[in-house]
Length: 332
Image (cartoon, rainbow, N blue to C red; front, side):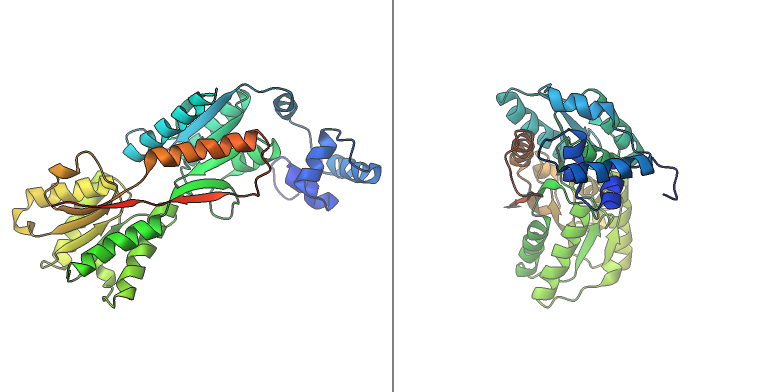
């Protein structure tokens, strides 16, 4: 195979020329499988050195009515509010859940997924730590453990997912600024390999282009989605354009950092901010004008509903990707 990794069910499927579903049926002694198909698969398994994971067999015979939830951090309102929506739906349907924090680390995420597999969860809801994915997603597919992504997609991976309509939310917020006769509109964005950051940046650009507003690339700056980068980038923008009046910010934490900078630099008091993520503390922000409220409980409940349908073999077409519509809030 050319690498040190263990052969996977997908490797067997490629060798035999069948789908992974067929390989799974062979491994589980499905009587519908033709003898020549079974023999071909067994030859490829022996050739590749593929060994059946015993966990897979145990998962076929029992249900634990437990669901794992993986979040990249606990301090973020989005993640914890979505987790509450997930748990409420699961509990109402006879399932219990446990939540783990990957600390935005793909390696920790992979380790936690393996731990959840060992605990024989019936399914997992994952807010990915990275868009790069990893072999743990393939492992879940091989073991036929259903999982649903929330908030972020994985590049090149087909998967069930529930997200906010990030493009629409950003487009509408920036449009509100444009219709308010804004001059230049700057953007404080995030890493473009994160689904939500990329789609919100695309929404900003699309609104500017629709209304013929000049996109000044020097006024598009990106941070790491945390408070400190919002503070730093707000300062960079004002040094770039001291007359700047409007800024679109793609999440709550960077908005907090930007507001902190403006509070400490009184000369910039005329700035108006439009931002993703409505919050209970929004009224305390003197520069925030427009916010995008994500339907957090609905996103969580939808993710839980979708996962249970997969567990119950509801025969939904795969993959299912839902995008929930956000609400635009105008602050006086």
